[in-house]
Length: 152
Image (cartoon, rainbow, N blue to C red; front, side, top):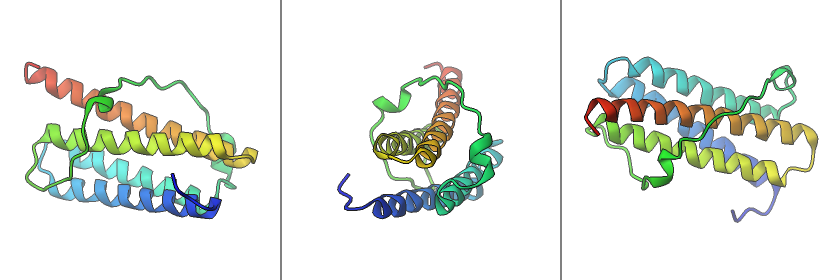
């Protein structure tokens, strides 16, 4: 990451959360797959919460009450190349794109966690990393289930 200040890093992270919220909002409106509209709406809402935490830089009560848990990594996104979203994509490709996005967000917050010196910022980035790990796991599980139904 080629940032010159902590403020630049936070600005970048906020922009990524905005992009993620918009991405999931678009998916919730545009994609016809059964039941996924609600899922993507939920993801968009969670990304907006992440943005609010970054805007506040973790000084809210939610952060102090947050409970961490171990989130397994299925590593499906490790074997996926970057793709751009198109409205006519099939469901598996949409899940691949979403998994890859969550993988990148998780890596970003883990890098920020390593660089943060203040305890409140460490808690913020640790919490955001865990939230992205949850998204990634959920998407990878959906992907595995979908592919299993396809005979893969």
